[in-house]
Length: 403
Image 1 (cartoon, rainbow, N blue to C red):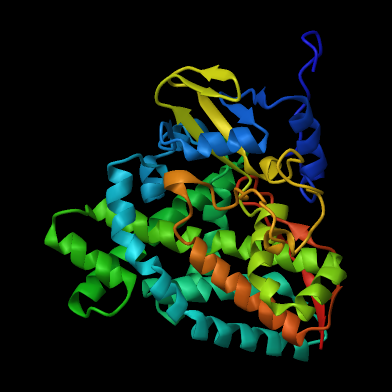
Image 2: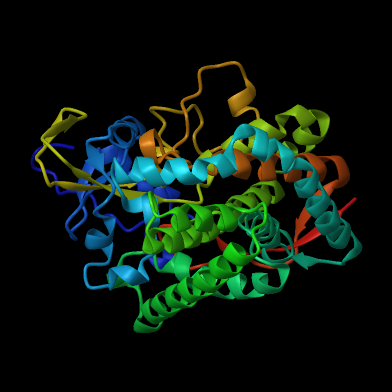
């Protein structure tokens, strides 16, 4: 862009582009690597610059509440270590990471397979299903609830509150008063719920994460009550809302690209790489903020201490500077033997998604069974998107599954 040219208009988040923001991302990304958003942060549009920001610890994530929710009560934004810097981030992440070790995740495979099998049985028996409610929501919701120790009877409550909390991560200016209220009331309801559940687990411990966190808090050395409660909520919401979108976006991509489903059927070993391609092609998370803790240079641009940026993950993952044919859905992309750059769907650096291995496993098992048992996916109605900007995905996806 020449010095005299006007900066491009960023409208990827406009309602009319909700179903496909990627052409709008491309216009801005091809024009500039950085763009003033108009609300106190600089958009970062390209893969190299986004990766540099996410990988650098001196780009802090702790100010997102102030940037997106300046007037909100912090007790109604239960994000725990998501919006922390070391050493608090390191301490809290270390406490919960034991629940997501490779060994623990692998042990969940039989249960995930059992759930997937039941869901596909029902989908194949039906004339059509609404795939978000039939598959995308229950799979990660059941898994994270069981991992935490949330009883089966309480999962409907989590499902009721989850969408409002996920929408509440969006900047407050785009939220209606009703949406802000749903987030705040949902947060308070979950805080009260986990306070009672932890008290119950202290009386009757089990082999779940709620019991483990309650025991750590009871010892009084490394976990305050607020940290314990917000960590439970963070794991619960982040542990299923993003995966819901990953599954929904993946089913939509396979329905629209039947040749890729056929390729999965021919090569079941592509199920794992296909999960990464889904996360690149149609990421469940489209943006995240960072604040410079000292003067930093990114892509030849100097940012001063205190400057704020918004990393456009959805744009970076379609950057032609990083990916060949970025707008094509290709399940072989991460299995081709070439040096394909990492997608940013799980972020990078110290805030790399703790549940990445679990989400990958859920996606891999589902895709493998889908390819083994389903011949065609057909559209049974129009997909409907949620209004969310940050945690973006489908509200409805009517499909027919044919064996």
